[in-house]
Image (cartoon, rainbow, N blue to C red; front, top):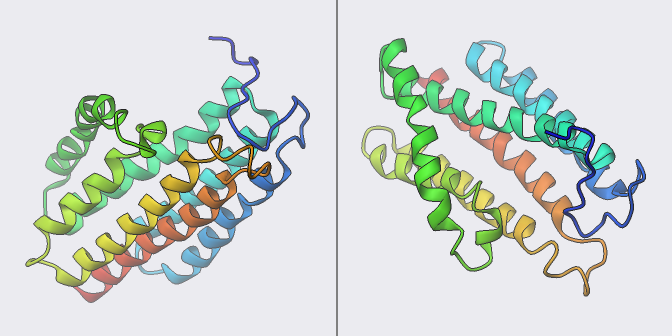
Length: 213
C-alpha cells in the first residue's frame, strides 16, 4: 500500500497543498466541539463518554485527511468512524437489548458481513450510490428503530431522527463532485457539520435511555 499516495476526491481540492481544502478541513472542528459538549453531559454514563472520545477522534482523523490527503490520512479518517459504529452497536446490544457481553460482541461483529453484503447493492442507488459504503448505517439504525418501537419508543424515535439527519448528510457528501461546476466550494463540508450533529444526537439518545432505566 502506498501510504503517501495523494488522494483527490473532493470538489474543493484543486491541488496537493496542505490548505487545498480549507473549508473541508476547518469544519471538522464541529466534531471536536460536539465531542466536548457530549463529554460534559455524560459524566455518569461511561460508554457515552467513550463514544464522545471517539467522536473527537473522528474530527481529528478527518482533519488530517482533508489537509494531507494521502492514503495514511484516509485510514486515519475512516478508522474512528468504523470504531464509533461498532462501539455504538455494542452499547445498544448490551444496554438496550440486555445481551450478555459475549453475545453483544458477537452480534456487533455481524455488522461486518451485513455491510459486505449490502454495500454492492447500495452502489446502484441514485445519488447515494456514491456513498454506498456508509448507507448500511442509516438502514441499520432504521431497522433497530422498528425492532425497538414497542420496547423503547423514545429511543426508537431518536433513532429515526438520527437516521434522517444521516441520510441528509450522506446526500451532501454524495453530490459534492456532481455539483462542482455550479458550486466550486463543494458540499462535503455539510457532511462534516451534519454528521457531527447526528453523532452527537445518537450519543444523547443513548445517554437518555441509560439514564432513564
